[in-house]
Length: 325
Ligand SMILES: C[S@@+](CC[C@H](N)C(=O)[O-])C[C@H]1O[C@@H](n2cnc3c(N)ncnc32)[C@H](O)[C@@H]1O
Image (tube, rainbow, N blue to C red):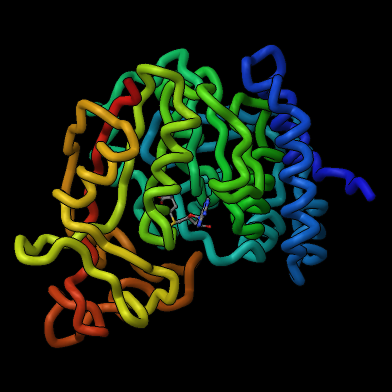
């Protein structure tokens, strides 16, 4: 039986109207229906209630070009009720946001990653952009702030879809949209000028197939912006944690930079450019009032912050840009 899609997912079809992507309308619709049926979430009713409790505003001015995504309004908003509702969507991992004066201090200073790459990638002005593993959509807004024509995100984590839905409901319609899909669900070929894959590759058992998906989604001449964990050890080609890595169960492989470059070239990419290599610090990823679970400080060896608690090299992240010829 066909499930009605939530308005936040239906909005995707408004954004792709009259775009080349529209020819994949039915495939996207079916993929979302399949995922919502295959992966129902036990807390969806609670989160639906949160969304239903959000105020309908007459005015809102979003600012997507600043490190903190800012929403302002001249409406008389009950901020205590709004903050209570937003906190029910805990944990907020990506941000920061300032929502009518409510500062959502997320686990990650996502603005720091954006600052590392924004000036070093192909300009996003007028571009169609895809963000695979987009979290709650923080970067979709930064992409619009950089002039993208449309910014589409996919992420299978339902809570992050709800956070995005909350953010979208509080502001006028825009050209960002998100679907609850995995990379392998993407039906598109040659539709995007820029594809972002940040923090996803090491979660994939077969990283090569993820790179193939990114390649396929790009138009010829388009750019992949890949951010992932690497290891910096000339004697080791890749680390495949036997059990957990920094307490994460789903980290399958951390390649060296040479191995990552070969994987990209094998997928067909050219003109590889290393944009940044940064060790993640406990200033960039930390527990806050909006993410009260454990964070990086709990995942590192208390006696040696160069190691994870399991004895692996501590998180080191590379950002690489590569072109589809
Ligand atoms: C480490 S977070 C990175 C989020 C964001 N891109 C960033 O850089 O901050 C990884 C995200 O990828 C999503 N994810 C995991 N596997 C995925 C897959 N196969 N396809 C798409 N997204 C995936 C997770 O739900 C999560 O939100």
